[in-house]
Amino acid sequence: MAEKKPVAKRPVAKKPVAKPKVSAALQLAQVAARAADEKQGTNITVLNVGDVLAITELFVVATASNSRQVGAIQSEVSHKVREKLGRSPLRSEGTVEQQWVLIDYGDVVIHIFAQEARDFYEIERLYFDVPVMTWGLGD
Image 1 (cartoon, rainbow, N blue to C red):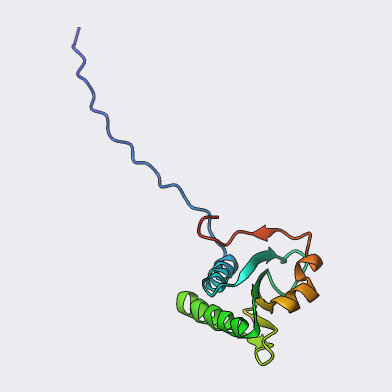
Image 2: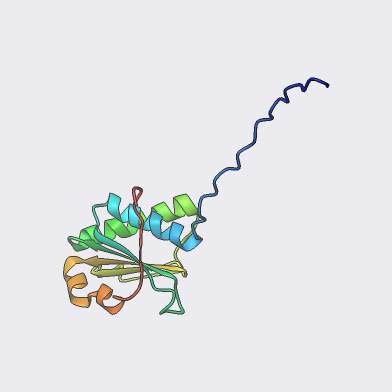
């Protein structure tokens, strides 16, 4: 009877675990939300409005304590999105009054409210039934 020689085992290559793909819209929303947070925006929320609005996929909503801060957040959001993603807004509204600034990127619309305007319009109440997306680094 022939003696069996031990067979050397080949190392099995492990397949890398695929990270879930983040859509371009969610990536933009996360960059915008983080930029608003860096400028001390508060009550920052990302709403998935794509199923109820045909014109956009996500809203980013942030609050500023005063009109000056609204402008600072608007500037930072535009700068960070351009720097990180190479995108510019299609249009902006409310930049003169700086009580409610809207920055429209098509698939994502950023709303930056002065505190009084956010309290008055209660935008989340209009979209209470849409999913809220995570945007923070630790989320």
